[in-house]
Image 1 (cartoon, protein in one colour):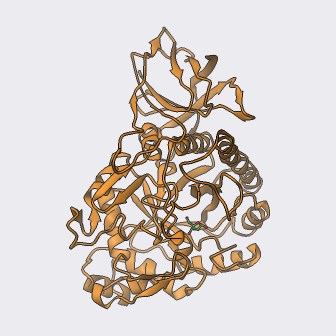
Image 2 (cartoon, helix red, strand yellow; image 1 turned 30 degrees about the vertical axis):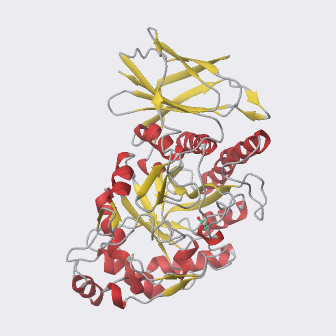
Image 3 (cartoon, protein in one colour; image 1 turned 30 degrees about the horizontal axis):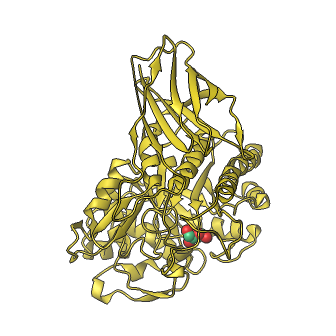
Length: 491
Ligand code: AHR
């Protein structure tokens, strides 16, 4: 067992951890919306407005702060007017990006905005810049947020919603460098300026406009955006980065069967997020030293080969203890960079990529990744504090990641991951004068390939952590191999 000293200074507050860092993403893709979250009002599966009650309850449990919709690549082919009004007369379309299936538009603006109200989370709408029009996006904002008299609000009222909804987060295009239009950054900037001009603030609603940022390490994209969009009501730019274990998109690797070598290469690729966030932030710092513009990692997670026998266009994959470690690493990175990273959205919430929930008929299971969001949820709205440790390397990667925050009541939350498959660590945390009255902790620890199934839904679930030794201003606890731990120290 390695002895690791973790130094924490609760007095040194670094940045606010926006709850939105714990955000999610739902696209019209595979079984994320249809036959996933949304089963329709007539389903025998208990639902509210067509959305499964069990999904709503489990997302509320982890305090989902924000939900991004309707895509993804789908967003730039989505015409919102097809998704309002009587369901039977809604226009059907082909989902060209994802399996060429028929999209019947039965889940549209009302269904999404109502769902966010039920979840008590912020809606985040990705607008269509790639194949839509300025007028279309402008009218969508008007339809959702305007309280006065206009053709859009009359239509909304006819469709059963008298009062407008609140809409804060509005993305102007998705992956405009790729599926959203294959644009050059200069061209995108001009379009962004044009589109955002016509997305107005109505009836006290204030839009938080998000520009489509870079793919992975495309630093030139960030540089061009920061040069051209600094002044154009840009509140944030996005970043997309997926972990692909093999690095080869034609053979990404299995979600459940992988060697130790593949496991460690997945960790290495995940840790690349640290470099990406650091370097994009450096460019942003140059143009925006006051941090007025945030970085939003609105697509992240593991992307494997689909489960054998499933539609390749549906991106359905299982989720193991490896995914839990990967989620923990990413969330620790985002916390540590919360001076610039103001939101992140794991891809995707149900049945797609690194999902927190999987469903099959009436059954629903929570993945190891879900449990990490549960262990980490008290970081939401807390203040990141200074912490440092001298870790150790395992198979060429740093084994341990961490982040520490203090909440409004003065309680500390320590979250840590240990990706080593063989070495556990004894963590001795020096608290710089903080004397905890009580400590409690939870742990997620299992074999690297362990996962929950519809027959065995509790293979990987959080447990109470073993003994936490409390001294006057220090605590110690074990961080086993292949584990994620959260320790709460009460004032
Ligand atoms: O999340 C799946 C897809 O990945 C999204 O539609 C797209 O934005 C990204 O390439």
